[in-house]
Amino acid sequence: MSTLQAGFRFSRFNLEDYTVCPSQFRLRHLDQVIWPALRTARTAEYDERMARGRFFHTLIQQHTLGLDVTELVGGADEQIQGWWQAFISQGPAIPAGRVFTEIELTAPLLRWSIVARFDRVIAQPDGRILIIDWKAEDRLPKRAWVEHNFQTRVYLYVMAEAGHQLAGRPITPDSIEMLYWWANYPQQSIHLPYNQAWHSANRSNLEASVAQIAAEPEDGFPLTDDLRVCALCEYRSLHGRDISAADPAQISAESNLSMETLELDMEGMLGNLPDLEL
Ligand code: SF4
Image 1: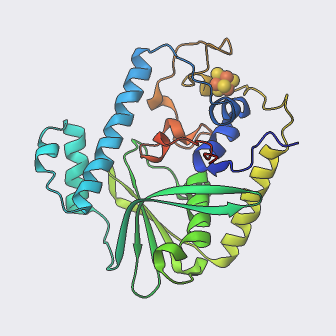
Image 2 (image 1 turned 180 degrees about the vertical axis):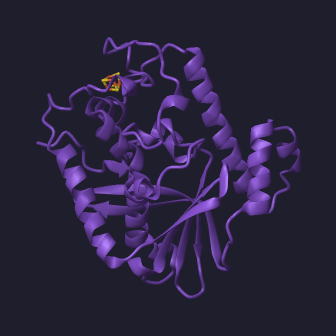
């Protein structure tokens, strides 16, 4: 019998967690173990970076809603002010259309579902869908890595399967495009036009990933051998890997580490809570 309960929702974050450490996936998303990790100077620095990224997303969200963020920007640190200037002066061209901010969609995936929370979606009058994701990472990853990471794959899959709810009419994968915009590299956006062939391959790969997780036996979900992953994991004392926390800046954006250690958006705050049974 699968260890996954009916109603379990996959996301880019729990798929990433499983990829870097199956045990971490189980503890966080199945058993939901809350385990206090020792706070060090480096984890504190990491927390600060995450908080900065979340604040930047909040600025964009409020600005999109038409709110005046002048005071918020004025009270922010230099780095956030720099990101904001880049956003205002070199942000991506936004096409006309219906704008959705911090919108969540869920699509079926085998016997389960998969969720994506989008920074911004524009449903254009001609039926095209543009997904925009704001990034505040220090390093600019290569396009090939961006194409294959779980965020891209999950977001495009979910939009193709559930985006009609936003568009108000059926959409095809060929009508979807994803755009990553980096606050530290505002001129180097990456555009990813989706298509049917990519969607078919994407579906197969995501189904294979969730099938692998669902097939884990009760005593499965092994610990990773990669101590770099443990260095920023809250369960490191639980597993006797209470080594000094890694310097997040040393973790390459193209390593196989969880994007949760690198991402600066809001979705990670949501976790993967089980559906309530009424
Ligand atoms: S401490 Fe290491 S082995 Fe344990 S859950 Fe975290 S990443 Fe996995």
